[in-house]
Image (cartoon, rainbow, N blue to C red; front, side, top):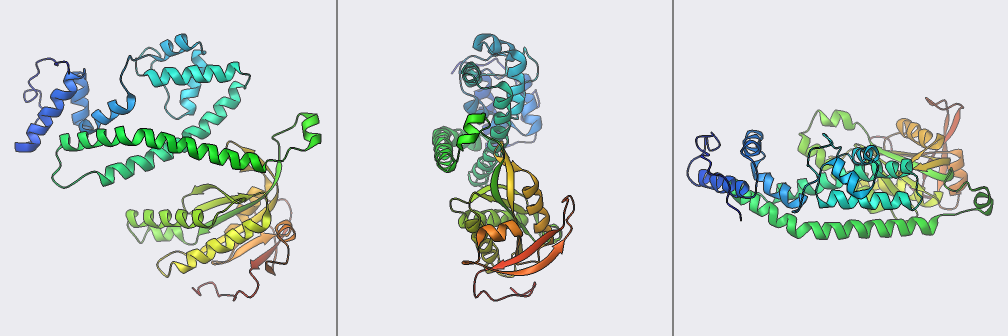
Length: 383
């Protein structure tokens, strides 16, 4: 380790308020970072922001090697600077000053890969759209892993140096494993979706692959979730949401897919309607089985043409499923006529729930409550 400049950290005010072991640990960490080339100004900012214990793991994640500005990355990789900036912004981590050396080897390699993808013939706008989807997904993944690590790697009495060293060791061990897990998850999900894609001969001849497709869409949400947030602590509310996501994951099997979670709601989609109706009924039942302390669930399903885009789905049937969910009784699953016809009468029973004019839907919609044969009808508050 190269020695850093001779700095009087006490005189600089970077040891204020610390005594004994905590002061010694802070001094050791400051000397370590200074020796690695971190400037006094950066150290001051980190101490003021309470970020000092995180600087070593930040540097470990960024990696060693030369630093590059956005302009240098563009010049070396051959990618247009404006496109590079748009790509990074799409990922959710935009460049600031074009000449500030904030990038590393990984940033340069990413730019080279992006240039190769463009050279292979894929359109830049499509690549940016994909990058936005990846960025949003990876932001959630990074947040979940950061929270997991920070919550579980701190012990009472830890010094800043203790935490810093433990975080670096964990990052060194986890980064390769998490990276391999993400690649695995991508491969198996892509494989399953490709296996279920259908390309009609007429679409192939017309060159119109990738347009609207027939799908069944389901939304399920927790009833009175907003009022629950006024009654319990945020940590408890987070546990409810986590359990809800766990229940949704547990009832979903192919061809049903969990598209996304939206706070107190989940969105499911399927190329086959019957399995989706079954999954919705299972999810509502699973929430009821959690007991009186867990919110009641309701669900709505609509079937029709939808447009898949960036991992999400759009169209009238998506809007309709959302509206139907909003008027479903607690503990029930409500479906439209196309869903009833596609799911059939063999595995499900239906009762007419009326014809409604729903906000944003251009025609009145006939709705049906769906149950499995022999299922006891429950009152809204009957758990």
